[in-house]
Length: 130
Length: 293
Image (cartoon, rainbow over the protein chains, first blue to last red):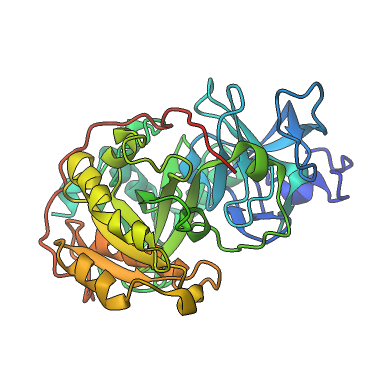
C-alpha cells in the first residue's frame, strides 16, 4: 500500500486496507450508521465508476441530459450480494442497479452492473469506516 | 451424522484448523484468506440466488448446541477455514416477500427509519428493488433478501417468481381500511397457487399508530390467521417502529424452527420437521417493473 495516498476524508488508505487488500474496518452508512460490510469481507478495487449525487433528488433520471454526480475510483468490491450485512438495490437504470443503505435508503453508495453478476462495488468515499 | 455432512472442503479446513502458526503465517503472507468464525452451523436454505457458487451450497453440521450469542464459545464452533473465495458471511439465507394491497405500508415495514425529511435520488425516482438485511437469532447470522412488491399490487401482476423462492411471506393489511382486509383471501389464493407450501406466513395488521381510526379489530385479524394452518399474526406500526423488527425475527424464527436440524429452545415451533422440497429456481433478479414513488 502507498502510505502517502490519501482518501477524500483524509484517512490513510493503509488505515482502511489490510495487508491482504481487504477492508480492515466495518463499512457503515454515512447517515444512519447501518452496517454495510463487516471487516475483511470486501476487496479494495480501483475502477472508474460514475455515481449520481447523493443529494440531488432527480439525480438518477436517465432521461435528463446530464446527471449530477461524481466519478469515483476507489471501491470495496464483493462478488456475492449475500456478503453484505445490509444493503439495498434500486430498480434497474439501464443495466445498472445502484446500491443504497438498507435502512435509511441514502445513496447511491455503490454500483452493480447486471452484466457482471460477480461484482458489487461500494464507493469508499460514500461510506464511513469504523 | 455430523461428520457425514462435512464436505471435503471442510475437512481440509479442519485439518488446517489447529495449526495456528501455519495459519497465521499464511494469513500474513496474504497467501490465504482466513476468517475465524464463531458460527456453529452452515446450512444454505435457499437456492434463489443463482449467483452463488454451488460449491458453497453444502449443508454442514458442526458442533451443535447453539442458542448462545454469535460471539460465544468460539472454541466450540470456531473453524479456521482455508479458502480461495471470500469467506461465507452468513449462516442462513432466506428470501422473504412482502405483499398486500396498495397503501397498507409494505415498504415502510422494511425500513428502520421512516424519516421522510430525506427523499433521496434513488428512492424518489428509481425505487428500491430489494434489500439484503442481516438479523441474528439463536446465535446465528441470517441474511434476508427482502422483496417489497409495492407498486404492483394488483393480484395478478406480481410474477410467480416472487412467490416461488420465498421462504417467508409477509401479508399486510391496514387496520383502518376494510377493503385491505377483505382483499386477504385473494392474496391467499395467490400464495396457494404460487408459493411453496413450506413458506412461513405472517399476517400483519399495519398502522397500529392510527388506533383511533381502527376498523379491523385485533380479533378479526387473529381469527383470519387462525384459519390458515401455520399462519402467525401480529399488528404493527411502521411509523412508530413498533413490532417492525419483530416481524422479521418472528418469521425467521419460524423458518429456522422448520429446519431439519436440532435447535434447542425452539419453544415457538410446533411445526413438523421436514426437508423442504427444492423449489424451482427463479431468476435472481425478477423482471423489471414499474413502480410509483
